[in-house]
Amino acid sequence: MNLVTRRRFLASGGAAASLATLAACGNGIGNSNGATIDARVNAEVQYLHQHFPGTDELTRKAVGVLYMPLITQGAFMVGGAYGRGALRINGVTVDYYAATQASFGLQIGAQQYAHALFFMTQPALEDFRSSNGWTAGANLTYALSDKAGNAGVSTTTEMAPVVALVFGQAGLIAGASLQGTKYTRIIP
Image (tube, rainbow, N blue to C red):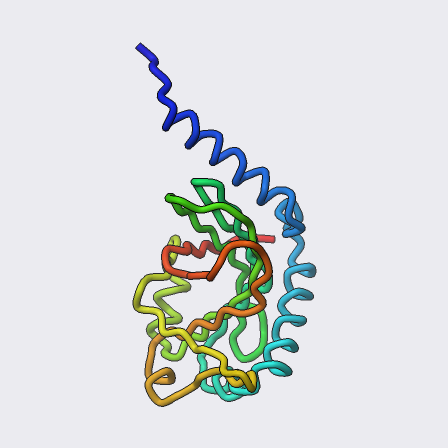
């Protein structure tokens, strides 16, 4: 017997609404051109260095940086997020990645934001690159910006294997967390 409950019906409607919201945002989901990703990453790098001077030092000390210039998140009971970016080592793109995230609970809205993951140790970078799908966990250290636009880089931050900086939030969902975000290598 196939019984559809109100809860199941609302959940499926929420998932459809979330996907429709993501599709409506200008994330370029259908475009897998590496040149487009690189152009967005170049703009993100320039923005970071202009607005967050502390990222200059963080970038110099990192063995690799994953730049995700545009993450689009939508939610109506069930939420999701998607974006594409590039991993750079010594300023050169070596791989492209997609970031996906799913969430459940009382939520509604849409937002876009950018983030960068600074890999501070070679083992952390190797673990990221060798995995089939690396998932950001609670062990990320976040660099927070102050009112002057300086990224909060401290001795503690620099000793962390991976440092995350989330910025440029615009939309109707409060906050952006990278916990549970899955990063998968793509071929543009």
